[in-house]
Length: 207
Image (cartoon, rainbow, N blue to C red; front, side, top):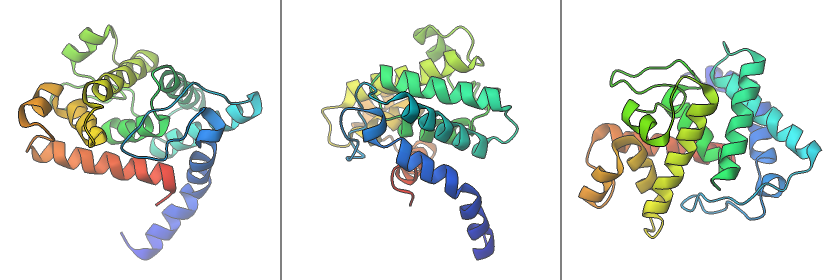
């Protein structure tokens, strides 16, 4: 990408990114901080109605940035589901955004070559386990995505590399992470962990 293209991209995305970094900050939506990238836990929401409206707007802008074809009401619905389920399962919502960007770029109809479906690219077996009957339904898919991420966090939270482990487990399955006692030596999975962490850092710090 040329320097001019990068600058243009930055100008276009700057308002949404600034909103994401600011209005998804801990003071706006949670009781505690998210300062440690390797401890992606959050607490119950504590936003005022005005702050919450700003949070919704920030999320919606980011969703629309990655999928400009989405109708505004659908982007808002996705934003609200991410906020709700992230707070319910006590995960940093910016991590959920990063995962969904990497998985589908906010395409609710996405299907991978392996058969993974929807925003969070749930495999049919995983969806059944999570009680998700329709992975193309925005609310069901985000529920499943966030719940599954939380389960991986709970499984590996005693490890200092919990973020790497939970992301690898989301991509390759927890059995693979347990087998190799870490991120499996799969190129796809290792690249996945790196890319999601880059996005997460970007949404946290803007760089």
